[in-house]
Amino acid sequence: MFMNINRFAAPTALITILTLPGAAQRHRGGGSTGKAGTAPLTGEIAQAAVVTFNGNLRNFDKKKFVVELDDGQTLVFRRVKHTTVQPSSIPLNVPVQIDARKESTGDLEAVRVCEKACSGPLPSSPAAAKTGTAQ
Image (cartoon, rainbow, N blue to C red; front, side, top):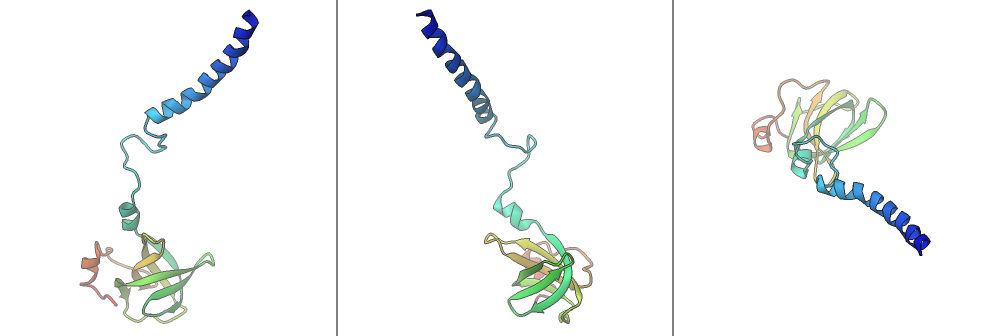
């Protein structure tokens, strides 16, 4: 009889030990890897982040810009109502700088397209960009 109790006690202790880290992690808030006090990355924050790309302008029309990046990748940027183009007409196959943000659909939205390099601050919002040289 004594032997049967030990046979069940070892697996029970092992199960208890294996489930404790998961319970502690749930207690801490889902095992977040961020620092304490930081806000989670939401769709609004991700869409507000603007990233700069440099490359050569390969093609563009009323709806998109096609740019070959310096590392050889080709990216397509959507042209929207508030996209600022400096100067208003850029020839093909010239170096450009594109400031873009990621849309909720995953597409890249061109905020500003400049020949060679952009100068000055980014438009703070679509309403602010409309006062610039929007195309």
